[in-house]
Amino acid sequence: MMQRFWRVIIVLLALVVIHAPMQANAEPPPGLDIELTTLEGKSVRLSDYQGKIVVVNFWATWCPPCRDEIPDLVKFYNEYVDRGVVVLGVDFMERPNQKKLEGFQRKYKMTYPIVYGETGDLLGLARALGGVYGLPTTVFLNQDGKRVRTVTGGINDTFLKQIVDGLL
Image 1 (cartoon, helix red, strand yellow):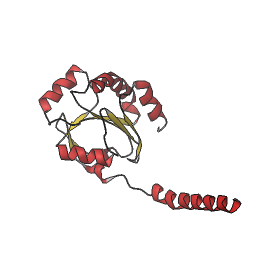
Image 2 (cartoon, rainbow, N blue to C red):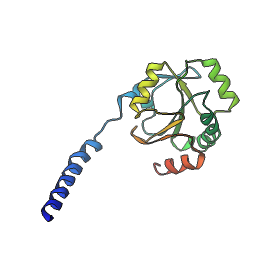
Image 3 (cartoon, one colour):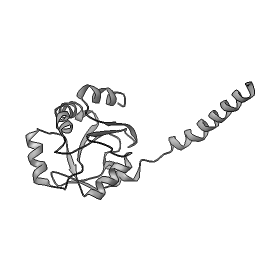
Image 4 (spheres, rainbow, N blue to C red):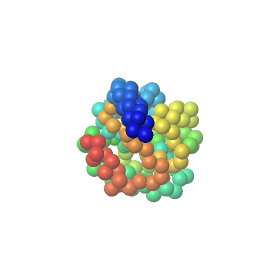
């Protein structure tokens, strides 16, 4: 019995020792270099924001919970934009339509950048960030571009602050 216990402990320690260096040296996922377009026509990549905390919010204009969380994202963004935090709204699962998105942005007073792109690029980005299995999905990246948390479903200002304050 005691011998089995020590075998389990040794195996667990070996896994920790083997896994820890791989995690520490892990590079940000290659999908961070996928080029997307802002509503202002600027090309951006998530890798452009190295050194900043990035909150990536996958949403769609037809999604009621997505629309419900927009005021909280706006409030959070306005408060944290000068603290090295970026919020990117990724229009997901819709055909790219800049005029429609511009009208939606005005209607909902979205002050944070909205990006869109071709379906293949958006799916590549979603895969690189661990997948999007429902809308809205919010992914938190630390200053090294590594995913630290993913939330599927609506979020609020208090929750956003709690997660990001832990990364600042």
